[in-house]
Image 1 (cartoon, rainbow, N blue to C red):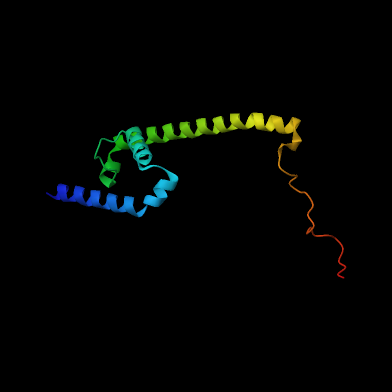
Image 2: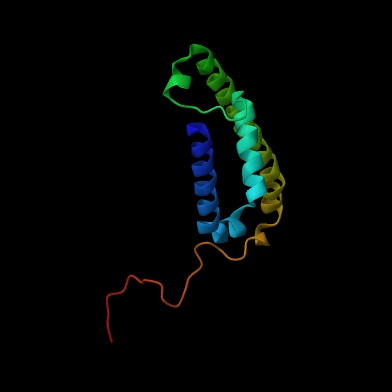
Length: 122
């Protein structure tokens, strides 16, 4: 009985949050994409459907190993993303050396409002 009421409360809260943040979700990420990411992360942790991470779950030493495996996997994903980003930057950096005009303007170009060294006010 309590589990059934808990599931109803969880569903109601989820629906309220979905309605409350519907505009943000539409602008940033789809709800299906967010649910898929949560499922992926839970799968990487080895969590079964409905399994909760709470103090009791954390007390089991086997779960610490699951968290460590998840952290290692996430770290490898971050390292791979960083390496891909650096590889994407190489052609841009090389083209900048041969074509300095690719930047829209000189970062320190003078403006009519530039501060001068003279102190004369007319």
